[in-house]
Length: 343
Image (cartoon, rainbow, N blue to C red):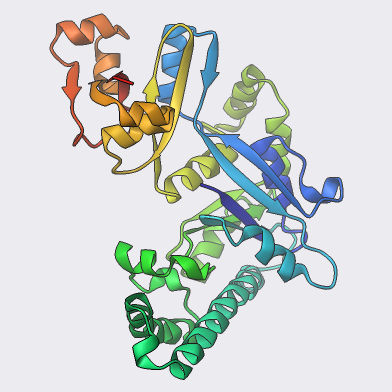
């Protein structure tokens, strides 16, 4: 799981990367590509930490990648370092551009690069199929040759592949192509502190299906540098519930189709990251491969039941709300789990 950050020069993408991950962007020390992880804000996790007061805390994290693409071939640097990303965070300059249409044009400029890149891939693949004898085509080749012409039309119309209505099986069939515009995208507009509504104006003008969030990186950088108590005081003075960068991290986490379950105790409270719709044995494998192989049962209580019982696991069990789930159980977001396994 990895989220690549894209944006035109001076859009604020490296600043946002630093705010979220606390890691300096590539441009700060001459590196082309820098990776960092951002903790996912989660009130449930914070409450569990409050109850257990553990020695260690391990929140869910989202890996982000920032590419400092400069020089004669900037797109090549982006392609080499972000082609394996599972999603894209597209940062737009909304603070120095004079009006929303210019900001929309800036978004389209980079989006068109991604669409064109995908179109060239499809054209080359279809050309190869046309030169190959039908008997030499594999079953996968045949299925791809049937799907690609329609996708070519989508791209030629200036639309990203994520808008093509592909199902899970079709996306899996295309996994080897490393398409850009098939990746889920979160659009973030970096606005001026005296024009916070610009992100809403941009979203209306752009008419995107992709989620759009606004942030003032200048304010957020100041906020991120404060201690937690000072952050709360600063936010309260602005009448804001949480930092914008927290919403962006959480949105990226959700966009990548991830969720968390918890293991708790006095030694550690930890949020384990798994794909949505994961069955219990595979979730156990997120902790350790041996746990998946030796999975027997999962003791499960929901976070809401835990809170309703005053933060007492014993009370959850006493009220009959502690469940024993088997191999077919699909883990829910926020489940608190204790595993039974035999290795």
